[in-house]
Length: 100
Image 1 (cartoon, rainbow, N blue to C red):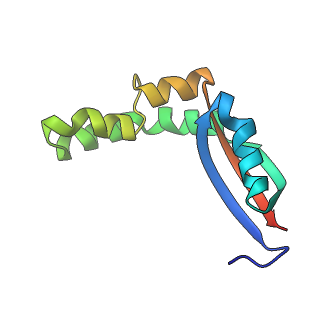
Image 2: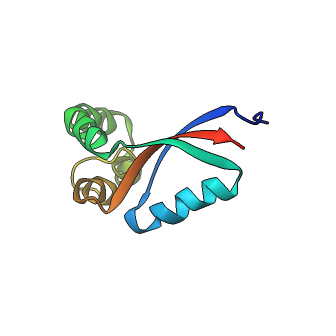
């Protein structure tokens, strides 16, 4: 249990149209949003920088029937998640929440 006035740091992604409801749900859960930051540009840059390494690792370690699932989970180039982040269809936010 977080004490009143305590801080909770939280980051995740959601479809862009759900961000306002997400923020409202955090507030209804007893948090005040002390700070919020858009992480999407940095996440997309990190995905680009690490794509080849993750592709090689998955190709080497994952059995063929599971390749698609692992590629999507890793948000490799050309996957639904990667494309949605790149287009801005998904927002990736970090919050500093204060318990009220």
